[in-house]
Image 1 (cartoon, rainbow, N blue to C red):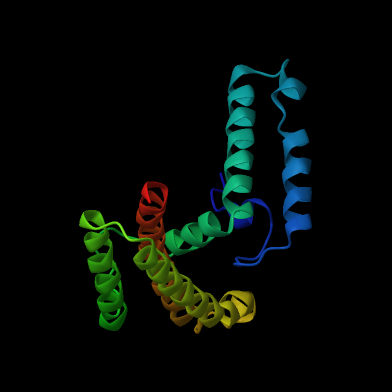
Image 2: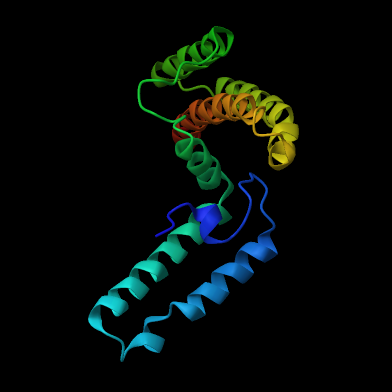
Length: 178
């Protein structure tokens, strides 16, 4: 059984799938694998249909969400293994500085500091997004031998974004306190 979601939908591996095609494939397979249409089939066949219906739902949920899709592609290439998530030192220093400011907020809530950290995180996010956009948009057209380099760039972007997301979550807690 095919377990690669892109193969399942007969789509190329891409960070920017055509949303209409994705929905069309999902609905077509939803009808094909609907358990009601196979109610009189042998129990083994019913189980197979149920498995395919579940695969269809999981594939659609994953591929229709940009973050899940990115994590899925990186995972299928073995790039999100635990413990192998080193990031550039300059980024880690910026994040460490932001985290120190968050720790200070823990003891001294200050709306100005919250706003300043939010602005820094926004600026970092915008820079990250702008830098990765050409890679995400052009990935599908890259030759196979160049894709590993692009995937490394996407992996670094993905990990940086997760760091920034955690900082945003912490900021949100401070924003509700002040």
